[in-house]
Image (cartoon, rainbow, N blue to C red; front, top):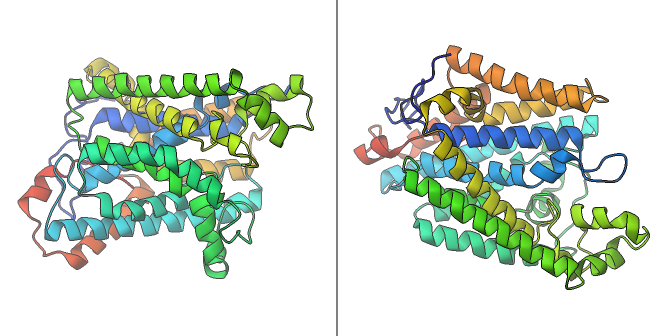
Length: 421
C-alpha cells in the first residue's frame, strides 16, 4: 500500500463543520500512537492482570494503565484538533465547535452504554471507558479556549488532587445500584448512581482522569509537525514518568507504604505471596495509603503522573519516528487503526463477548492485533472514515450547523486539522 509522507494529506481529509473537506493533513504520528494504545488495551483485556502463578502478566506490566492513559490523552489531542488546533476557534465558530463536541460526547456515551449491555451479558472484565469519555468531553467544554501552559498546569493539578478527591468522596456520593459497566437502563433508573460511577466509583474516575484530556488538549494546541515539540514531549514525558515511578517506589519500599497497603487490604494473604499483588493490583481505597500505590489503575498521584508522562513520551517518540517516510510506511497499518479508534475499540468488545478463543489468549490477541489494522487499512482505502466515526461526525456536523451561520469563518477552515470521535 503506498503511503504518503507523514505530514501530507491522507485521504479522506477531515470533514469541516459544513460538510466540506479541509485540505489540512492528518498527522501520522498521532494516529500511530493512538493505534499503539489500542493494541495495548487489547492486550490487557485479553491476557488480564495476573497469571496462574499470581505474577503480573506481560500485558499488565507493559500496558496496564499506560495504554488507557495514552488513549485518553489522544482523545484530548483530537478534541484540540476539532476546535482549531494551535489557534482555538472564536466567535460563532467557537459556539459551533462546542455544540459539535457536545454532540460527539452524546453519541460516544450512547455507544458506551449500549456496549454495557454486551459487557454485562458476557460477564466481561473490560470496563468500557466510552461513557467516561463522554463526560470528560463535556467537562472540557469550558477549557477549550485556555492556553497550553494553563491546560498543562491544570492537568498536573488534577493528577495530584483528583485522586485525593476520589478517595475522599468514596462512600459519600450515592452508590450505583448496578454492578459492572453502566447501560442505558441505568441512565433511566439510576442516573445519580451512574453519575457517581463515572465521577468516582468506576475504574476511570472522571474527577481524576480529566487530567489526561486536559494534557491532550494542551498538546493538541502545539505544533505537532515540529521536531522540537516532539522531542520535548518525549524528553519531558520520560522525565515525568521516571520521576513518578521512582518516587512511588521509594515511598512503597523504603517508607513503609507497601506494608501499610498489605495490612489494610491484603492481610489475609501471606506476605511472600502478597507482595506482587500489593505492588501491581489497584487497592480498594480502604486506607489513605492507597494514594502511594503505583499499581495500574490505582488512580493515585504516582500512577496518574507516571501514566501521564508515559503517554506524552509515547506520542513524542512516535511523532519523531514517523517523520521518516520509510518508518511511516511500515507503521501505516497502525496509523490506519488509530484513525478509527471508536470503531475498533467497540469491535474488540464485541469479539471478546463472543467467547471465541477465550481459552487461548495468545491466538486471540494475535487475531485482534492483526485483524484490526488490516480492517482499518482496507476500510480506509475503500470508504475513508471508520463506520462509527462517520456516525459521530454526522451528529457533530448537524449540531454545528444548528448554531452557526452556513458559511464557516476562514480561521476555522484553515485550522481544523483532524477529527476525534
